[in-house]
Length: 248
Ligand SMILES: [Fe+2]
Ligand SMILES: [Fe+2]
Image (cartoon, rainbow, N blue to C red):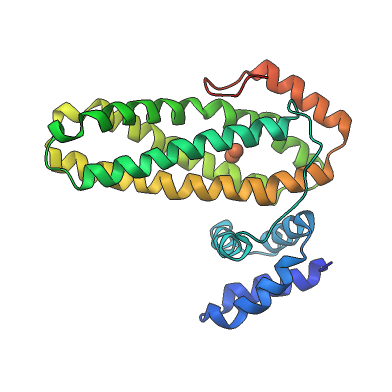
């Protein structure tokens, strides 16, 4: 296993290197054997040493590319009512909606008037509804899961995820409002605005989910005790679920 100092050096190198192809091979090798908790702690220490959160976010993007397909953490044997199982299943449903969003964006871009996209407008309303309802998912993460990680000294990843939730919340509201107000603008204006906000949500939320599935959740699984998971489940039940949470 790679140790924290080695990882911090690599992250510093990734940050300062203009030509990423030079360090990428080495990074791929190192990240292959990385323990998600050690990665989280290394990143957090860099922030404490003065690396800005924006810079850290850039690093996360590099990780995404490097880690794609390389993490095969075994999480077998988890109960269907385990908070992480619930969150991951909700992620799958959010991702399905993002796939639909991508299809709608393409069709809207290639159409000329509202008449051509009647079906897509209906789909868009449904997608906006699901995305806005997913606030309960993000709320459960923020209120029940992140504070427990922070109690264990893991503050970096939760702070980045919170920052992204805030940003996404704003964009999702803008998407909902745009769909609602479409009668007040020309088709071109609608299509351009939809492309801007829709593409942003598509990329940001897909990355966000990837980071949680591959960095934050595995870190949590490794750090929290059974008793804490039980408390989290009770808090989840109190906060409530999304309209699309799979029922057991
Ligand atoms: Fe999240
Ligand atoms: Fe999430």
